[in-house]
Length: 114
Image (cartoon, rainbow, N blue to C red):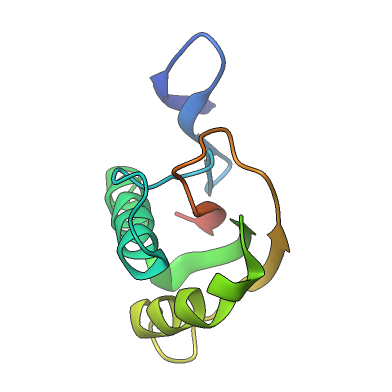
């Protein structure tokens, strides 16, 4: 069985299949804010979506992080490390990328177990 959440014409915000939660890329609400603010907003969105699926950040399997500017890497990591439960870090990749809106500094995609 496949469950889709917040289905739109191009994407679902989240899909659950076989005990795995797949999130679409999560972006900040506050365009133009610094990396600390934007990272916290994105991680709060991830927390909320995972809770809807009956999961949480301790069950993350993989994270893909897209940064507009690699100079934001230390700031992102500080927020990320404070957010993650100790000993529960997922597999992760971080790359530099242009994002769909110029005011976004970060986008994060995660996969988690239910």
